[in-house]
Amino acid sequence: AQSVAQPEDQVNVAEGNPLTVKCTYSVSGNPYLFWYVQYPNRGLQFLLKYITGDNLVKGSYGFEAEFNKSQTSFHLKKPSALVSDSALYFCAVIFSNSGYALNFGKGTSLLVTP
Amino acid sequence: GAVVSQHPSRVICKSGTSVKIECRSLDFQATTMFWYRQFPKQSLMLMATSNEGSKATYEQGVEKDKFLINHASLTLSTLTVTSAHPEDSSFYICSARDRTGLTYGYTFGSGTRLTVV
Image (tube, rainbow over all chains, first blue to last red; front, top):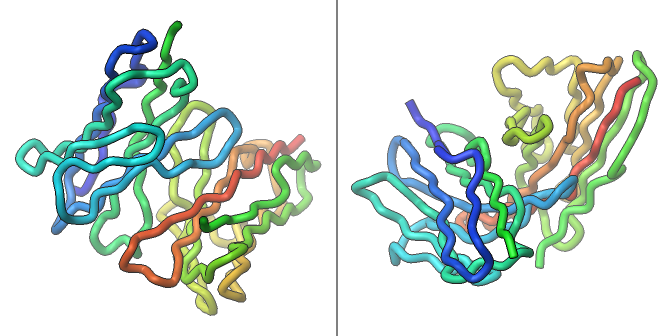
């Protein structure tokens, strides 16, 4: 079965430290992977996506993600966290035969403390 | 960049009434519009997919007679919650996929907080 998982409900990190938000997936065919961020009572803001090409994808606001085919993972990373990065992060995948809809993981709440 | 305008941002309605939510793509043509529902501190659940000029495709468990979706033009899609009840209270978000398709560009509206009293 096709799926997308974010194993952590919450990630806590101190400002200035590197952060990682994890995502794993299972799809039929080629994986199309996305990361979005959501601030309270707001829509989603696009961070980055992997369609094809380099495994290391650089996105908005200093975020990057590494596509790892063997581990079926697409973890979101940032070298130095900011307090303003505190938000809800969603990994999303396009499943085959899904009409190109994005299917979201459950979300990971990131808290960056000063 | 691409913008999807979603209105209203908040709405409170009485039980039994209907509410219409609009999503407009402002500077691109939205071939496909997706409607999601989000409960507090939970993920986005896909409700339906609509292609311009076609009937919407609803996900399993979503009542198509309760959640009416119209995508009459390439820039406008609407979701009408009919005979709303308190359990329909939620955050509804639309997402538009642009006509280019292959770029997999998705733009999200800012969401609508529906409260049914």
